[in-house]
Amino acid sequence: MTDPAVERDAAEAASAFAHPPVAPDATGAYGDHPDQVIDFYVPRTDSATGASPLVVVLHGGAWRAPYDRHHITPLADFLARRGFAVANVEYRRGSSMPHQNAGGHIAGRWPETFDDVAAAMDALPALAAAHLPQADARRTVVTGHSAGGHLALWAAARHVLPTRSPAAWRLPSPPLLRGVVALAPIADFVTAEELGVCGGASAQLLGGVDQWAERLPFADPAALLPTGIATAVVHGREDIVVPPSVAESYVAAAAKAGETVGLTLLDGVGHFPLIDPAADACAVVAEEISQLAW
Image (cartoon, rainbow, N blue to C red; front, side):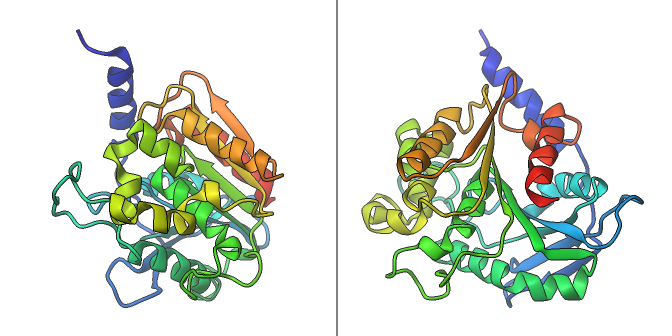
């Protein structure tokens, strides 16, 4: 017999990935590597007056090489049609060559994945000014899906990284963000590994089990609290890719640290409708972003 949850997840994924990629209005580079680029989308609504809030999008895909920014361009376009200026960030991901004890493709690169997110965020104001003058960088919201949700939370926590962190990662003061909206994020690495999320991708991102304990404090959003940055998490109750208990664990960690993180759990929704413009959940995502940005 087939598993109804697996069938629903497959149908939701098929719907989300059925949309053709949407070409950006401009692209800027924040480094020399081919993956060190940001695509920009101009606000598409006639009602937008003056500069529009800037939404920074970080795509998911378990930090693995086969999944790049193109699959989330329909969401970028959806947000642009809601009046936002959008920056869709690419970053270096894992090798496509499997290694011993790895579940499929290797997840992420240490330290390059984090190097890129930090460099992209630092370069963004100047790149947006050059390529997306419609954007108001003073009203920036970062969003990301799944592994990208992790990176969005990490980008907002760079000022609370341990002092032993690479200098390029750590900020001396909080980033100038209106907030973060994390979509089904891999937000608590310990819980994610206990559940086997994405075939142990969190441990792979950190370089394997031998590096886990040493590197966890530099990478796990649940260990980087409180941030002082307004944060909201949107998660489907029926998500079997990243179970909602991962988000609930992160929210609980935030509360323990004295910080309130908003959590919206959507009934009858799995992992992929959050980035599917054809799904009602995508409108919820846009509304959560609006509440922080406008």
